[in-house]
Length: 171
Image (cartoon, rainbow, N blue to C red; front, side):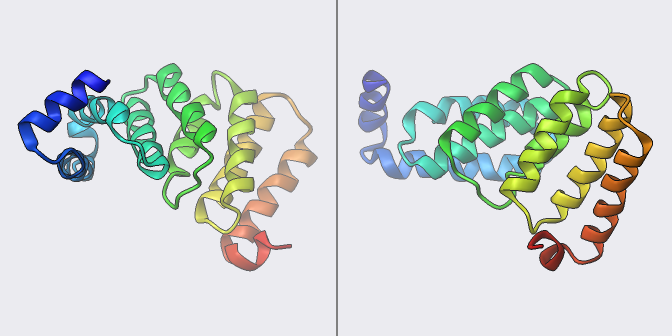
């Protein structure tokens, strides 16, 4: 890593500005979404060891995970999500990654889907994604064979939360 930083210093003269410029280029690539997933992920992986700021590292892990999720590479997306959670940064927008993963895992791993949905509800209680996560929880509970009454209760809570996410999530 030191060797990479040294080479970067030689080329640019200012390592922080160079990393920041590359980071901004990465964010522009992400705006293209799935069509640029591979390029965005490669750039994020390159920048990850060069960035020291915890929030930036979290954004990079988010990009890595989301691009894998877009391409249905769920195990690698889960690894990136777990690395993101380990950083402890809960930035607005990061809830999209566990939401996509929870949705993708409903059929194959409903237990994991329920866990991810609960994490969204705990980490982002006032978000629209919290209501979506409740819906995913209800579907996963049905897949797990839980009682119809239990899953109906979850769906009803999701409908109520969708009507007024801020006040309902604070109850």
